[in-house]
Length: 363
Image (cartoon, rainbow, N blue to C red; front, side, top):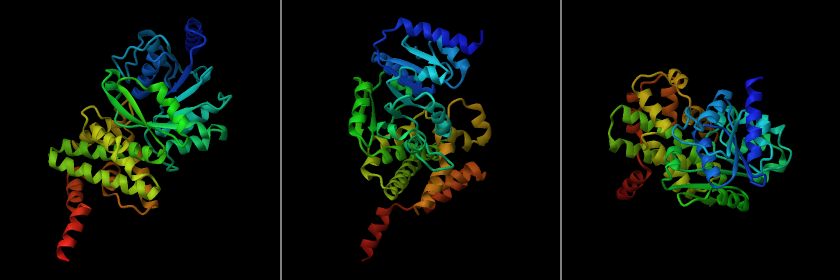
């Protein structure tokens, strides 16, 4: 019997043992974030169909109840059913959590189409921008999914390391949708005493904050790797926040979004957290490791690497100056020296309020 058939038969047997009336959530994507949200939803009493790209990962999860590759140490309840079959993942699903890296989003959404027999609420928890089209995740969804699902889309973002969610450490995030009732439904599903989603209608801003902060965090990692100090990093993060706000305003987002959890909060976490993937890549790049080699070695995706080119193009499209984003692209894709590139850029950056103060004093 083929490995896939063995998996599917085992999943069917497990499903029969569970309460047939239990609401089913399909989690598409079994990285750290998809895995911890599967655990969270299962703890809330939902049956979770966890779709994994790698068939070997399915067998590993079934055998050990752990996702050792992406989130070791987290035991998944029996009501999390892992599968590499999209048909089984979406079978009987009442809603979908979409947790696929941005570079694979379009192909996975296209794969889902065949098995979507009715409109289902879908929550994007992916943080990135499609390089070729410059589309955000919800825009890709609207491009691929049937029009009947467009009113059912929501997004989740904010400062949230998966490992800390699993340890039940207080975590505040943002749930956004153009349809507030849709966001409220997801809030009910996910809300616990330690995981606290707040609601927003700024779908664009929430996604931009989650995507662009990853690029800034590559830079803070480089600063740490070069041992350029905490003063420098604080200035860098502040300038990075300015760049996020400028791009967001130019694209029509609410600037207040970027001073909240989905902007400043997420930037602080990813830019300074010791387990941040993007910060870690920056540290290693500053110490002479090649980007290509680093990407080969990592199982999990550092979204800032994929997003940097797309954000640079968005900046051009909207006539927004983003020196940090430009510097990250130069270092990663043109082999520029990290130390000289960053120091030269920082010498040119002058906060807007300093310029204004000087001008006022002169007058």
